Amino acid sequence: MFQLYKKRNFSSLLNDTFAFFKVEGKNYFKNYFTINGSIILLLIVILYFFSQLFIDGAFASLQSGNENAFLENLYSNMAMFVGFGTFLLLIIILLSILNYSFPIAYLYLVSQNKDRNFENLWLYFKSKMGRIVLFYCISIVVMIPIIGITILITVLSIFLIIGIPLLFLIFPLLTSFVSLTYCHFVLENGSYFDAIRKSITMLKNNFWNYIGSTFIMMFIVQTVVGIVTLIPYFIGIINLFSNPNAIEKNEQELLSGIYILVLLLFIIAIVVNYTLQNFILVNQGIIYFSGKEAEENTTTRNNIDLIGKNDD
Image 1 (cartoon, rainbow, N blue to C red):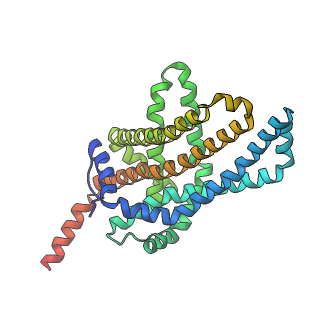
Image 2: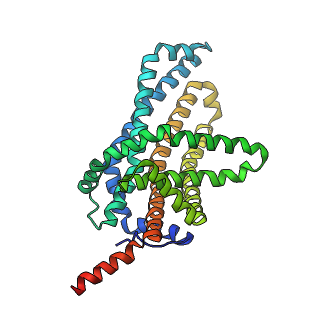
Image 3: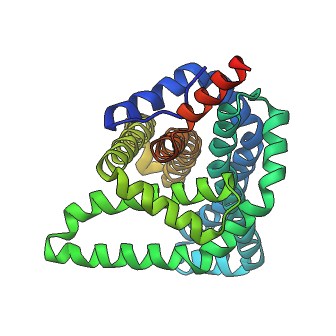
C-alpha cells in the first residue's frame, strides 16, 4: 500500500508521485474517467458547437467576399453564441471543481486505508460538497484578487528584468499555495483563513523542496502536453499543404481542413491536459500529507498507539 504520511525531500516528492501512479494509477484513472469522463465529453461537444459559429462566419465571409459577413453571421446568431458561451463557462467551472477535488478524495481514502472505488469516492464527494462550494465562493473575493494582483505585479516586473526569473517562482508558488489551502480546507473542519495559515506554514517550513518539486512536475506535464499536441499538428500541416495546386483551386477545402485540424488539436489538448493535471494535483496532495507528517508525526503516533493496543 502507498504510504502518504511520510517525511519527504525534493527527490522523494517527485519519485513518490510517480510511485503512486505506478501502484494506484490503473484504479485511479478508471475512477477518474468514471466521474469526470462524461463532463469532459460534454465539454468537447459544447466546444464543437461553439466553434461552429465562428467557422460558419468564416465560410460566409470567404464565399461572399464580404469582409463584414463574419460579424453579421455572429450577430445573427448572438442568442446561440451567448447560450453556448454561458453553458461552456459552467461546464469548465464544474470540471475544474471535480478535477481539483478528485485527487483529494482519492488520497483521503488511501490515508484511511479504505477501498478506492466509485461508491466511496462519491460518498466522500457528497459529504464534502458544502465545503467544496464554500471554498470556491470565498476564493472569488479573497484568493482570486490576491492571485491576480501577484501575477500582474510579476508580469509588470518583467520590464525590470527581475520579473523573468520571478515567473518561474511565482507560478509554482501560487499553485502550491492554492492546492495546500484547498487540501486543508476540504480535509479538515477549520475555517478558510486557518487553511491559508496552514498552507503558508507548510511552505515556509520546506519552501524550496515543495516549490522545486511543483515546478518540475508542472514543467514535465506542460512539456508532455506540448509534444502530444504538436505531433498531430505537424502531421496535419504536412497533409494540408502537400498539394498546393489543389489548395489554390479550392480555398474552402483548405479552410475546412484547418478547422478540422484545430478542432482535433483542441480535443487532444483538453483530454491530455485534464488527465495529466492529476500528476500535479497528486504531487500537491503528497506534499500536503508530507507536511502534516513533518508537523504532527502522525505515523509515529499511530505506531505508538498500535503498540499500546497490542500490549493491552
